[in-house]
Length: 424
Image 1: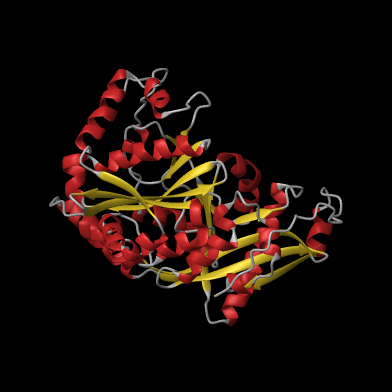
Image 2: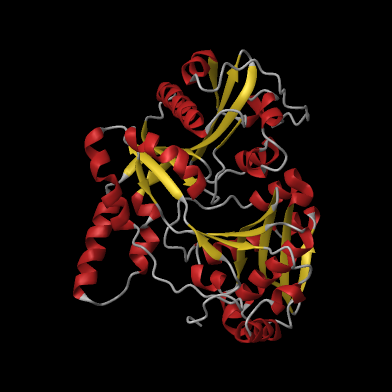
């Protein structure tokens, strides 16, 4: 598979009508649907800036060529008088409840009678749930990775254009024998939500949240890991030192492309060891996913391996996304988490890497909220929107989703001196 990556200046003299007249923009906008990034014209990378790594064709190609089983793709371009004004990247997933929630249901082994009854009904419900979902965004990521538009077009107009694009994509997929039952727009920040929520809710989309994204803000005065430690209360500095003392026998090493490729089987094995313990799984990565990322993203993608007595026992990955360092997938042997706090070591090592890269944020994404807060990450609510094609089931969609995905209880830690440290 090939793709275009010619870098051209985004034209800034596009003869757009007055921004206030959205009807003219709609009338003059052409929408095109593609099913492989290799089919998309060069205009895709013309409109998407270098700092939006997860929407660039290099990342999308890596993902498409090593897609999780059952995942399809759809790419939408928006042009005014043949000039690009925006793009949207979508995924199509055949959702099977017994696979997505199956391990969660199986994992609940509490002998309590009422919980046993709840587990039975949850299993009964999930076995009945099967449908195609069109996702504007990325199921492998947390964050706003669904679309990008010319900055001159206001958010309210952008979301209308995106909706129009999704409707056209659904008609195209219907012709391809892929009937879409559910449409999902995922992971919007609060600032974006202010501009799009009312329009989407008016159009019968249901708003919901899952888990917040955990984000560590790198302060301007932090020039080294020592500066980061100095900002912590003594209690949390002790925790850092204790974690590194327990992990002192790890040999940490960044792997290059050849080494990632040579260790593909072991890396995938470690990833699966962590993934299978997740309560909500919509996919399993392709075994060659990390190799493809390194091949396509080069230095923007980094994989760090942890060795113990020359045995590869853990790894974590990061992707540089503008001024953010994105914590991507990881894996490790759980015995080393108990004995040497390997996961906590990884979280601190990501802070070090963020300081070295001089980014503004380390984006830890979802899951393991409490331990991530102990290194200084704070929760950022992310808002999602979904709509069923039929109005009747749409009314009960949110209650059904909440039933299958209960809210996680956790305590937010506050490790820095000026924070409220009433929680340890």
